[in-house]
Structures are given as C-alpha cells and as structure tokens.
Image 1: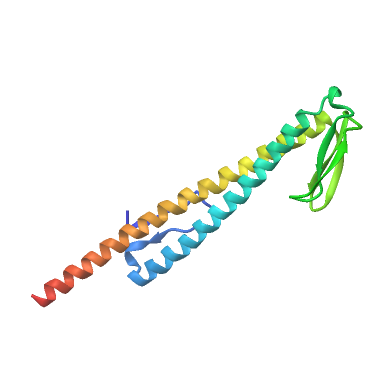
Image 2: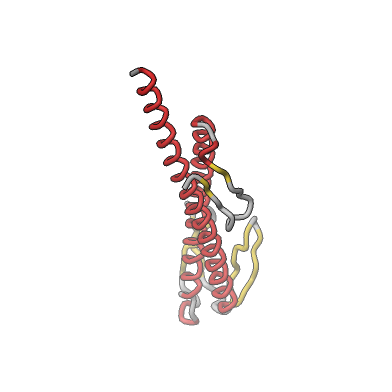
Length: 161
C-alpha cells in the first residue's frame, strides 16, 4: 500500500509514498484536493448542461400538430419571457451553442438533444472515474501520512525515555 500506481489513468505516474516526507505528502494531498474540487465543479456544470438538454428534448416532444396556433412563452433571457404563437409544428430552431442556432425538423431536434445528453453523460462518467482514482490516491496518501506521524511520535517518545 506504500506505492500508489495509477497506470490506467493517462498523465499519472507511480510514486513510492514511503520515500516522501510528511511535508511532501501534505503538498501532494493538497494538490489532489484541489484537483478533486475541480472535478466536482466540472461535474456540477455538466449536470446542469445535461438537465438543460433533457428539458429541451422534452419541450420538443410536446410540439405536435395539435399545438399549432397555441400561445407559449418564449425565453429571451434566463428570466425574461415574451408571449409567442406556435406557427410551425414541423420545424424548430434550436440553440447549438455560442450564439448559433439551427433549424431542425422535430425528429432531428429530438435526435440532437438525445445525442447531447448521451455525450454529456459519457463525459460525466469519465470525470467520475478519474475522481474515484484520485480519491483512492488521496486516501493512500492520508494513510501514509498517519503512519509517518505515528512513527515520528513513537521515535520522539523513545528518545525522551
């Protein structure tokens, strides 16, 4: 357990924790804590994006020929809406990112949002796997730090008696 190997994760290397000082272990732990916080923030951002794509897909599902001519609220910003009327139930304009929009038929829009949800979910799974690996490394570092502190305390107790 003194050696932590993260061979499956690219960009990580094998380190013999028992050869590191307590200060080096603390620095390594701090770095891993920061990386884990970044992973948590990324997961939160992806979760929000995933939810928006799911909601957009559900909205497209509700557009049917019977909704033609009905009044809806059209979002201008995140908190401002204006009334509008559904004129075309065969095509929709979707936001594809960074201020770009595309016209799609209903099935194309459903497929687009389904693919986006799938892509974001895959990215979330990758980040979660990296986070789990980093957490295991962090736990091993904490255990080694505890062992070194305990050994140091015992050595000091032996020296004083």
